[in-house]
Image: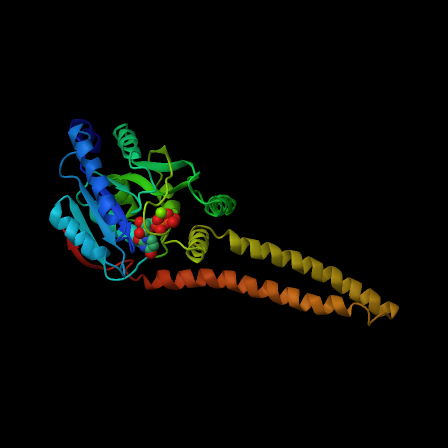
Length: 322
Ligand code: UDP
Ligand code: MG
């Protein structure tokens, strides 16, 4: 059924763009994306009822006014205003869940257009070939700072080591079919890490390579502390390896403890009870530290469980313009 729709007619495409304090980029971004839609309509790759959805993630600047203005100038632009800053992943989800009702296929991308929009053509091609998910993969990160490149590399290595399946150098530039989005909607978790969840859906997928560009205006909404907490969130919401690691450390320390007890008893028998004070003092701190870290890691998971059990809404839509 799904297949025959794809073959018989061009699909309805929705582009979903999360925006947090993006007033500087929106006019240019919407211009470029509208031009892209027009181009795709001309070649009959998509139908004219295709749309661009800007999700305002509780911005503090003029982002929403800008979206309303763009909507009044062009009805192909839809705006969703979230009631507060729900975070990139939740804002993206809000847009995807909105779009899946109306579109056959949805592509998510960042407001700064660092992701080359010409890759959309190739993504749609892969979709027509029967792929339900198409991942945009960065072929080079030449334009990223050395710092961003290195931290990103470390991030992907760490994720892999923790047993989380992520597509290397893929962020949130991806195509998803209606079917894939319906499956995604079944993942109810509050701790949302989309690039770890989408591979779990497991439908037929493909990748498309593109060059990652620079932000043409404004600045990154992902400062270092957000990047670090995003990475930690990703690991702890998809893997329990850190807890296993603690168990391993605990076992190791117990073995060391047994050896130390034997050593201490031998020293006692030999009458050298005063030796080893420095060692003892250091051990207390080292062991205390390890225990605190372990509690912290376990606490992180308990915090996640706490948030999951409450099952609060992941985003709240204040209003939409369409
Ligand atoms: N973003 C968002 N909510 C946030 C932070 C970011 O919706 O709390 C959006 C932002 O507007 C952009 C995308 O997420 O469209 C990626 O952010 P950015 O380009 O600043 O990240 P970077 O490319 O520097 O990693
Ligand atoms: Mg960016």
